Length: 202
Image (cartoon, rainbow, N blue to C red):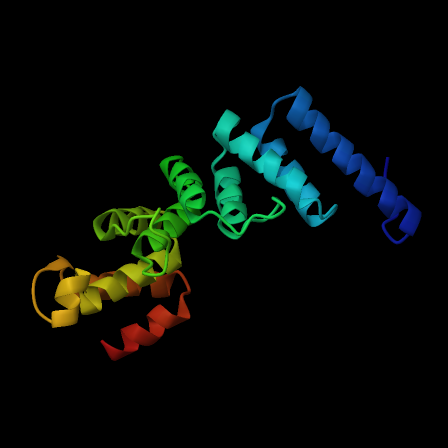
C-alpha cells in the first residue's frame, strides 16, 4: 500500500504503522538493527526518551549492537530518559567502552575523550595511555575527530599533571611532529577543517 505523504491523516497512519513494524521486528523477531530503529523512532518521533533509553540499553546489553551502546552512553552521560538523573559519566564510559569493543568508531572516540577529560568526577579515572588507544582505534576506523585529537596530543605531548605544572619531566605521550603531521593529514582527508588548518601551519 502506498501513502500520500501530502495527506496529514495518511502521514499519521504511516508513522503509526512504522512503529508497529519496528516493535514486531524488535520484540518478536529479535532483530538488533530493528531494535535500534525502534529506539530512534521512540526518540525522534514519539519523544519518549525513557522508553528509547530502555530499548537502546537492552539492545546493547542483550544483542551487542554497538550503535545502541553509543546511544545509551550518550543518554547516561546527561541523564536523559531517567527522571531526576544528573547524568552518570562512569556508566556512560562503560557503554562507550562496550561499543568500542564492538568496533564502533564513535564509541571509541567518546570513551577516549572521557579518559582525557580533567573535569570528570572521581569515579572516572583519567587514563591517558588508554585514551590514546581508544582514539587510535577510532582514527583507524576513519573517525576524523579522533585523528585530529591524536595529532594535537603529539604536537604538544602529554605529561602527567604534576610534571606539566613544573613544565619538566616525562611525557606520557611524546612530542612527535612526524606523527602529528600524519594524524592531521588523515583527519584533513576525512574533512576535519581544524586539522586542515593545523596542517597548513606545519
